[in-house]
Structures are given as structure tokens and as C-alpha cells.
Amino acid sequence: MSTAAFFDVDETLIGFKSMFRFLAFHLERRGAAPGTYARLTATLHRAAADGVPRAEVNRRYYRLYAGENAAALAASGRAWFARELTGAPFIPGPTARFAAHRRRGDLTVLISGSFFACLDPVAEHLGADWAFGTRPVIRGGVLTGDVVTPLIGAAKGRTAHAVAAVRGLDLAHCSAYGDHSSDLDLLRSVGRPVVVGSDPVLAAHAQLAGWEQLPGTRAAEPRHQETRT
Image 1 (tube, rainbow, N blue to C red):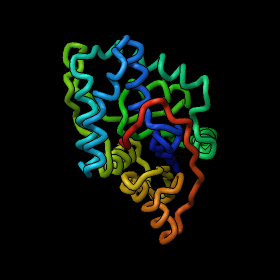
Image 2: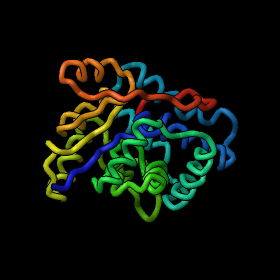
Image 3: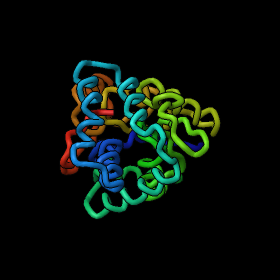
């Protein structure tokens, strides 16, 4: 029987928040003035601190790219990840699991609130079969600043069900890995959920339900403060 392994990306496979690391890199690459990153993201930090739903914070993040050329963003993403690879971006335990699933012939699927500029180079490096992220609206090769649907929370669980329907998978025999309470819908959708790290909400679910837990480690923080996506 064919099975799949679904992976959140940020702080599950890689030890940082890709969207904000990438934004800092992209602005620097474009020669943006000092302080631009802090200015653009200040409202996102405030919204997250004020309890604005993560899906809405996700939408606001992508508004920062209104008018950006999609091909140029993809090229910037490849350059960004090449620089990340000079360090140690991957969390060892979950990444080893990813490789083990590939060796067994499982379908490997990345599911993230991040977008193509960040996800495509990660997926290519890992050899993932599919990668699903938040899809920016693109017209004439340019981002409008809108998105189709933020791939956050319940949308991750729906994506796993859609993959299972397309590929004829029994989710009861599939695995999923996540590090944050917003990954609960994804983890609950499969028969073999694995919690990465020490998020208190996920840790409580793991204890009650007997879910497996793997240690999570963070990469060194970049120079800018980041917010959860």
C-alpha cells in the first residue's frame, strides 16, 4: 500500500522561519536602505503580538511583495537558500526521518505557509515529491499582493486529504510532522503523527494521545527579529 509523509517546513525541517529570513535577504540583495526590513515587518510583529489570526498575518506578509516580479523572486530564493546552505539549516532528527521515508518509497510532501521563493529550493534540495505553500496571486508575471488561501492551520489538514484523494492513499497509514499548534489539523489527519520540538500545545496532545516526539533545534537567529508564520 502506498503511503505518504507530510512535513511542515519552518522549525520542523529547517531551524528558522523561512519567510522572514528570505525577506531580509531579498531586501539586502535589492540594495534596500537600512531599516527597511524592520519598517516593513513592524506591523506584522504588532499584529502577531496582538493575537491577530495567523492566516491574516500570513496575508499581510504577502502584501509586502505587491509589484514584485515572480521570476526575480524565484531567483532571489535560490540565491538565499544557497547562502543558508553554507550554514546548518536543517534540524537533524526530522531531516533524517525525511530521508528514511524517501528510501522506503513513501510520497514526501512539504506543506507550509511559506511560498515558492522559499519552498522550491528546499524541496529540490531534499528531493521532495510535492511542495504546497501559500500561493500568491500572479498576473502578468507580477505578484499582486493577494494570495489564494493562506496555507495555515486547517488548510494544512485539507491539503493532506486532497493529496490522499488524488493518490489513493489511506491517511491512517501515513505520517505527518509538525512543530506548532497550528499544525494540529495536519497531525490529526494521519495515523502516525510526530511532534517536533517542545510546543506546549502539541506536547500536551502527544502525551494524551501517545504521539511520537522528536527534539527540535533552532538555527542561529538572523539579525532581525522574526514573527511566527
